[in-house]
Length: 397
Ligand SMILES: Cc1cc2nc3c(=O)[nH]c(=O)nc-3n(C[C@H](O)[C@H](O)[C@H](O)COP(=O)(O)OP(=O)(O)OC[C@H]3O[C@@H](n4cnc5c(N)ncnc54)[C@H](O)[C@@H]3O)c2cc1C
Image 1 (cartoon, rainbow, N blue to C red):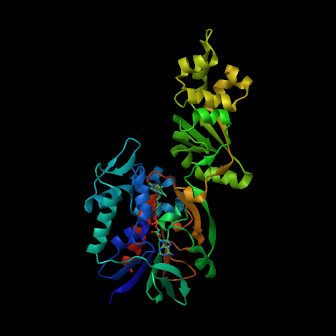
Image 2 (image 1 turned 180 degrees about the horizontal axis):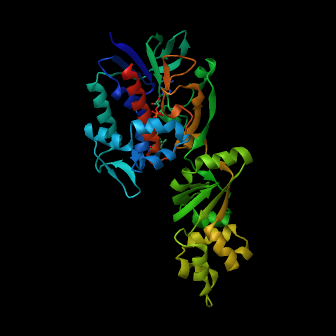
């Protein structure tokens, strides 16, 4: 006799879980509030579609917060395993110059989603769209369809409800109340992988809006990330700052502001910069920065807008600031604009197989749990690996 599994929410975590569950042991149905599955997955595909990252395993795992929670999960289904699995369903991938992994040229996000949905069809997974979960009634789930409510019975319930950004995709985090009613701890949602506010001077932003600071590295606390930063009216965005979200968020929570430090010339030491400055001749500082350090207008304006006149003109100090340029962040972008959120179900509420300790036979995976990772493939890999890992556990039972 097969057991019934009801999966609530139809994002990447749910899709991988359903694709990996043993169809000879389980009758699997996905209930999704939208009229189609994987809307956020498709939104993720709109920009650079980083399915995962090619980094080696130890470094890969260290990108997650908390990384000890993720170690067994990622090890059970690695970036290579994901690529092999995708290849098996007809989706070839390649490693980009950033070491991120993308679908091969010509393969659109919808093709990836359709390939996964075909796999679910092959495994007889039932899909019920326009079904919104509205809480529990005794041991059953209350589901709302377009025209009525009904109570759903199943031997196993698995929640894959996502985080709380880009609400238009269906992941709006309104489910937290249902878990709170059951005494399950919810950590308030906060933005991650998002833009951060800097109170730029008007004169600066008029010149610099939309410009990119390339080949830099950014530090917050002891964490440092190489990459790019885009200057916007709101502040700063881009891979290098997204990856520092945990540290920035911590400082914002504790102090109201956060300090980041940009190394505008990571390829040179401070001594090498001073050395380059020593042959100044009769150049202006601006000309010196252009000639000797290859700086562009944006970098020079950035130095001028934040540094005092004395610091900008005193070359000893300027060399130090170029290597360790301080910027104060005053807030994060609104949560709905963030690529991902932290918060949701506290990790202390689940056992090592994602089962809610207070509600046996109820499991939670994906972004609805309180964890963090940088964008660039780590978020999707985290969700896929959780889906795989839970399926492997249930298949063994
Ligand atoms: C703009 C953007 C770009 C991104 N780019 C990348 C990228 O390049 N690489 C990367 O790794 N990650 C990226 N991400 C993040 C990634 O898309 C998410 O981390 C991932 O989709 C989370 O998967 P999930 O299965 O946990 O939840 P989701 O994908 O959020 O899916 C949850 C599903 O649950 C449904 N649901 C919610 N509540 C209910 C309810 N009450 N009843 C029924 N159904 C419900 C929702 O409608 C939704 O379909 C990006 C995200 C955004 C917003």
